[in-house]
Image (tube, rainbow, N blue to C red; front, top):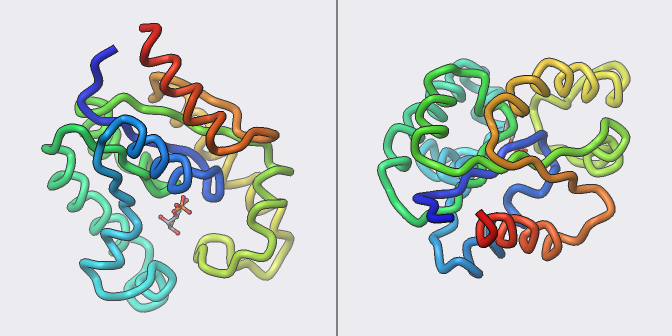
Length: 172
Ligand code: S3P
């Protein structure tokens, strides 16, 4: 299958950046991490953008960057977990890329994220697993309804997941 670009979507911690890098390398595509680009443009880490300006500001910044970078070709984009919160983003991303949804269970996400401190949406007073389940529930449907390929990540190495994407593209 010929693809213009590839977008990796899914919950925080599912491996979008790790897999995106090796996938881009293999395909000879350019790898772009949207969170990193936002941090670069804003001159602040994501956590501080949220603290200083709030989530809406971050989402606006996210949408603005999408409008700019999705004109490119031969890129693998690692998208932030909340990228599909805006309809316009879904449209732009679907129109300009092959969308791979990397999915995992709440338990797996909890294991991967329990010591992580740089995800503002997961800094909570209460139970982290409950919070993860809540956000995942809110987003599951939109991820599922807006992807071209869905891959389970738990129990696999990044290289295996990358191969699954490549095999799918070669076979279609
Ligand atoms: C977010 C996910 C993060 C980052 C921000 C918000 C989300 O990216 O964009 O903290 O809403 O799920 P990762 O999915 O790369 O962790």
